[in-house]
Image 1: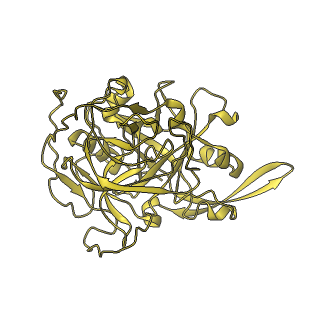
Image 2 (image 1 turned 120 degrees about the vertical axis):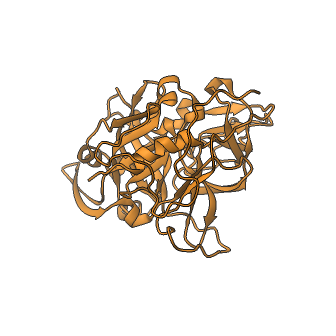
Length: 369
C-alpha cells in the first residue's frame, strides 16, 4: 500500500555519537518539536514510590490484555521508509568500548517492568494496578526509560497513567522482597510521546520515552496491617544498570532480540507465561501488513509467541550478551496471529525513523533529580 505522508525530519546525527546525546534541547526546559507531547508525570515521585507496596506489585495485571492490542490474519506487507540517514546513539558504557562476543543469551539488566495505575480510577482498587515492560536507554543524565506509548498514555481514557514506576530486572519469584527489585525502583517525572499517538491513537507512533527520578531500594515493614516504607537511595538508573543505545532509519530486515514480561493468553485461552520473569525472542524483522484497527501502516515484526505483558519491551539490534547491551530498534506494540490458528506468532513495533528520534532526543536531554 502507499505509505502515509511523513513530515520530513533530518536527524542531526548520522553516525556514532561519542557520548549518546545530540541535538540542542535545553536540559532545564527540554524544548521539543511541535509533534512531541511532553508532560510532567501526574503523580509526584515520592507519592508513586509510596504507593507500590509488595502486595500491589504482585497483584498488578498487564494492561495490554485489556486494551486488546492484537491482530488476526495477514496480508500484503506495508512499506516502512526511512526519512533520512540511519543514525545511532551508543549504549551507556559503549561510547568507546568494544563489544566482545558471547555464546550465551544473557538477559539485559536494563529491561524490567513498569507499573502504573489507571487515570480517573480509584488507585486503591486492585483493578487499577497495571504493568507493562520497558528498558533503560542512553541519555545525557542517565534517566531515560523506553516503552510503548500505550504503556504511558491510556487510549481508553485519553490521559497519562498515574503512579508510574520502573523496576529493572524485576522478577516475582518466591524470594525475599529485595530480590524482586535488585537495582531499585525509579518513579516517573516526565513523559515524552508522539503527538499522533496521544491525539489520534495512531499505533505507528506507539512509543514513549520516560524520564525517571533517582532510584531507591525499598524496605517494607508491616505495622498494624499497614506497610511502612523505608527508602535507601541508589542514584541514577543508567549508573546502576546501564542503558541501551538507540538507532533509527535502519533496514526493515534486521536481526533483533525482543525482551519482555508476557503474561496474557493466546486467542485460544492458553496462558504459557506468568509475567513473573523476563522472556526473549530472536529473529529477523520484516515489514508487517497494514492494520486499520490501530491505524498501522508502518510496523516491523519478528516471529515470536510472546503475549500481552511484553508490550513496551525492547527490540534490540546488535545485542551483545557479553555486555548485555545493544541498540533500541523498536518496542513491542502489537501481537499478531498471522495464520489464524488462535496462537500469536508475530510481535510488531512501530518503525523507528527521524520522528522517533525527535521524541527520544527531548527525553535524552532532560535533567531530573
